[in-house]
Length: 225
Image 1 (cartoon, rainbow, N blue to C red):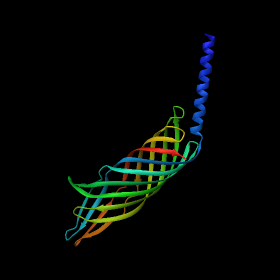
Image 2 (image 1 turned 90 degrees about the horizontal axis):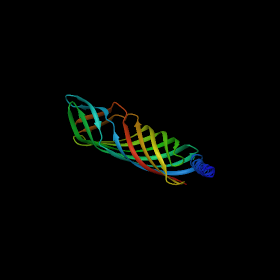
Image 3 (image 1 turned 60 degrees about the vertical axis):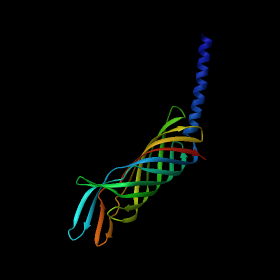
Image 4 (image 1 turned 60 degrees about the horizontal axis):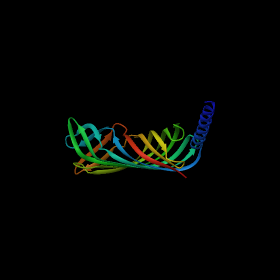
């Protein structure tokens, strides 16, 4: 019985030591990595006003709601123990926008495509030794949008705006070099500038009254260099 107890104790110590050593490798590491992800986006409704200046000026205030879109991200980062810093570029496409006001919905109102450049900071929180963990991140940068108005009105506009994001996710280390990620991202920009254009003899002005906010669920991969 004593021999069995000693053997069990020695085995447990060896296992714990190996696990701890492996965890230290993942938690306290430095070096560059590359990362990529793809996501599904849901755009929260944004309040806008549509001012049509004709012989009898009219004003319609409602909400613009893009359909579900997609997002692709590429990033280069650097490990600093549990902290990471990252430069990221992402592309978003949100089509089939509708405009709703006064119980009326106008479909095919337009679409938005957007490219953004972000600087991010993350903190990794390990679980279950070296394999599983969570991470939290914040980012700031610029978003460059192409806005297309279709249907009854035909116009386009290009704008650059300040952008910010918050990310919460989990990772799984496949090995020392490769990690798989699953995350939720909340991305927002400052309000777009007014869009003014003429449609024949009619002057049309579209004004945003709130900041666009996009939420995403994404799958990704991170590879140490």
